[in-house]
Amino acid sequence: MTVHAKPDAAAEALPEWSLADLFSGRDDPRIETTLAAAAAANDALVKLKGAFLGARSDASRLGLLLAQGIGLYEQATNGLWAVGAYASLSASVARDDAAWAKFEADVRAKASAIGAESLFFTLELNQLEEWEIEAALRADKNAAYFRPWLRRVRLGRPHELSADLERILVDRAPAVANWSRLYDETLSRMVVKVGRDELTLAEALNRLSDSDPARRKAAANALAQALEATTPILSLSLNTIVAEKQVEDRWRKFPTPAASRHLANEVDAEAVDALEAAVVEAYPRTSHRYYALKAKLLGKKTLDHWDRNAPLDQATPRQYGWGEAESIVLDAYASLAPSFAAKAKTFFDQPWIDARPRPGKTSGAYSHPVTADRHPYVFLNYMGERRDVLTLAHELGHAVHQTLASPLGTLLADTPLTLAETASIFGEGLVFDRLLNEAAPADRRALLAGKIEDGLNTIVRQIAFHRFEKKFHAERANGEVAPDHIGALWLESMGESLGPAVKLNPGYEHYWAYVTHFAHTPFYVYAYAFGNLLVEALMEARRQNPAAFAPLYEELLAAGGSRTYVEALKPFGLDPREKAFWAAGCTRLERLVDEFEALV
Image (tube, rainbow, N blue to C red; front, side, top):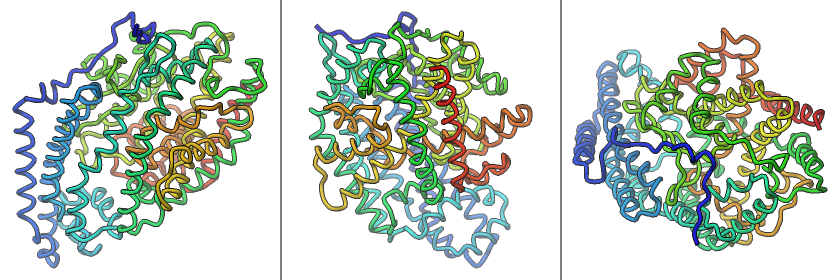
């Protein structure tokens, strides 16, 4: 008998998105029309090959060409990204459908082939000297608009290869991407058998926060068995992905495995190192201390790993219907500014959210921006618990951010990861504050525990993930890393972050396998800690002057990727390049543990 877990909130219909605003189906003729238009814009750009270097002595001519060339590049990008987003969004809710998998792969290959023809563009721009580009931008205001995008292109200048080598990398990218596709499809097809129940990965992970210790333990052990069965495929996939990255990093002369991510995020390696150091130094005062307190409350000497997110009592956790979650999120957003709530409400009024868990649907949550001339789509697996309400607030924060930045155009709206998490975590914080303020005294301790655990999951846990990644990449440089050794690296990293009050039971060594960021976006994870501690500082600024904060904050979000993280935070008097900045954020988390300890 197959029984899929259903959240209590499912009694109320959960939304599924409609992607008709993009395309009506795989056979929609607009797909080929859109790809053809993108190819035409790309062909027009290709005709300018050599013209940029040829005009380097004429600032006015070069400025005109830059404006024209970047405009064509953005036009092609919009078309390719629109079709690519449709394929990705459709496949993410149908990972058990081979037709959608093929469609997604075919679209990726077509887009790559089209984009490869204009590979010369950024290479040619980076052959220009700084003073030549600056003179051209002064001469043409339309070109000057794209100064932030050019700045980002120029950051990659020291790491570019020859045109032929760059073309080879582009041409083979779709095939290399199949390793991450295999990773996704393996997890989406995984069945976690718990007694008579057959759970998806998302359902099994959700059961780890069940109020019944026996159900948590059973789910944890079943999940370990299911993950162990997948490790031959997932470890080979991850080994291959990292090996491919190491080859490319070596050719591009990146000094560390994380350097290319720092470059993409426009963040200094020193800032990330300072972040990591501050969080690791705070382990004993935050996570170690909190989990010891939680063990005491649960009447245990140590917590089993499946107790890490357990509720503090065995009563059935409070369930939130979808309509109630909508009301909570919108009210919280309105407390910041009515305009934020209005933008978020649009996503509830339109079929732009997919929240219903179901077989074949990828686990996790995200907001996909598509392109600046289209609207984002929000994806999550809503189970009706408090964490799901916060996840909804998180992803809508992304969606509002993407909406605010969209007038800039796709190239400038694209935000580095370090700032991309700002609005999402801020939105989560607004909702939590609302829930805490309205909580009865008896509920306050549980809510405070939830807030601390969310902070630990997005700060301490993500830095532990980051440290695991660094260790894995270092080991992979010496040869393929066997699954049992990957598990040992995982246990080492997670053990130091969780502390002596959490027992890593047999089977936990396989849990690295469900963290898909390791395969999709190496070294993405520190952005969560970066964003969370940054938001702590922004929320402190809001508390000090709420009226002045809202317009400055909206300006930060509307700037998209047009400002560096240093420029974006300067109006608030914040400098994340200093270790003291991150230490202060950790201190705020420590104060929450102080408050929790007083309640205990």
